[in-house]
Length: 331
Ligand code: SD4
Image 1: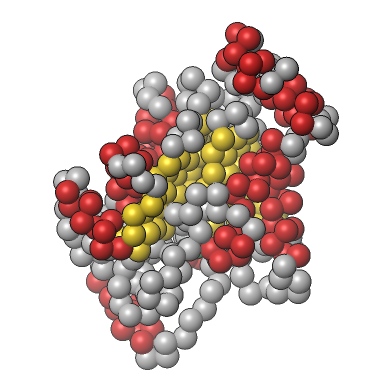
Image 2: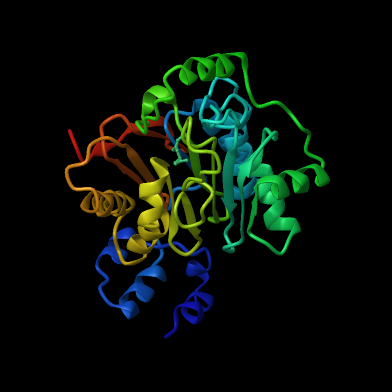
């Protein structure tokens, strides 16, 4: 029986609840279909997870989920907290500029129906995730870039704002003295926020937003706004998001890979580990970059894995609120 038909025929599976252990037993496409239709005994929902230790953002998303609103609203409003936080120097206002002194933002959002929106190289707007949502909802397109994205944002009522802060301007002036580009990204510099949520209905959504790599070449776009790389959601299976050196995540289409691995039966933890291993296979012996993957499945089970120790993710559900340490490829 085809999956869609099977799901339609089952009231329990109408909520799309899947047992991870049942999925793990699956090897063939038919068996995957059966596992996807096997209800979990006790799915965790609502639930929100985000990369790194973004307490305020996950609090906000949790508040939205608890009010009964959608996972889509929760992830948008959650990550907006970091976009507005001037102290976070890798997201939104206060994000560090490229080597030419332009603060350029990347973001995307994806809903339960596979709709998605994205903005890349967006300047002068504090909330790129909300512009990405407008792209998704108000245009027939998925990605808007640069000046076009900015013009669209103004048309949608977003205000122009200088994204530099006193601190990032000073740091940039300092950086210009050596103009040395370093790709190291870890907890010390906070990093990108990728967020995944499941609402009361059991529907999944995700968002990801960043100012990208500090002092990058002008025009560079990372993985964060690229659907499938920095973020992917499939409401039948789960979602994944990434942080770290985006070039490596794009090369393996990391988040899509992780969701597909979960579809084939891996737990979120196993899928994230495999995602990092694929990247390391292409970078044998290379130690000068960090990647952190975070995933959630339809049951609300979560997992994460990274290249170097230091990556954590925050999880908020009825089971409590915690910052989870993640195992790493290198010790
Ligand atoms: C990027 N993945 O632009 C992002 C970087 C990141 O802030 O995670 N950091 O490649």
